[in-house]
Length: 323
Image (cartoon, rainbow, N blue to C red):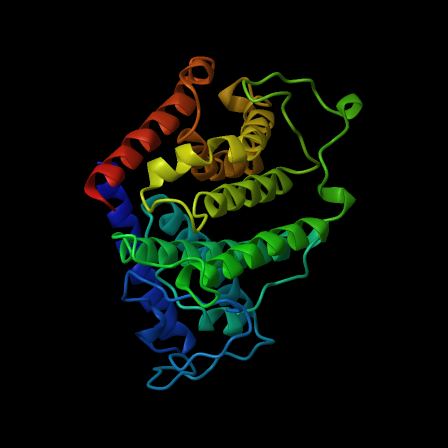
């Protein structure tokens, strides 16, 4: 059931992308038809040129960048990128969308400005998209030398290239974090409610959108660590192998989710911003689920348990089928 829903998600995303191409004057070749992505060290997901875009064979002229329509399509573009990253993380597959559209619709604002937090979101999605492409490339590479023939000690070996890209991504996460500034820091304990959670004291922020940024940030880091070039390609095995390394990251996601969810004790108290970030917390909580112990699981709410159990079962299925 879960995999069928994910396939439906991918189909809808692809159809939306085709409509988006036709409306914005781009051909359909920027949709990734292959399930693999070849990523080499130094690959830049933003600012690269691609031979697939440019509007050749496009059905409409380019939209002026100072128009209202351009801003609307720009917003739609980043929504599609976000959904594409999510389906890639959840399904252990390559992103569907090629990177040249990120050149046509750059991030809407700089990183670290609270009043234009959508720009911070866009830059984060670019980073997560790079992680998704790298992860798919790593899964393909690890399956190819399954016989152990690859000599990882050679400077020019595929694994050494993978380590270079992995380390670049890790450092880019640090750069992104450093650019957020004090307005993105958790609230002090004397200015926020004290909420206990199985992961530690809940973390609360100035806005729900900031909480969403941090949950996605830590989810991306967990995903990156689970695709360490030395780990096996099977998702559930890799998650267990680095569980100690990612424990603090997983705890951060749980603490942030607890701060968001616990604020509403009654359904009538829910406002749209809180509802949006609660929905957004589902994918990071799926990521958490692969390594949450049964003791912690027993203390969670029914909805949280359902999310985590469904994630664990889906990852077991992926492992058994070799996906």
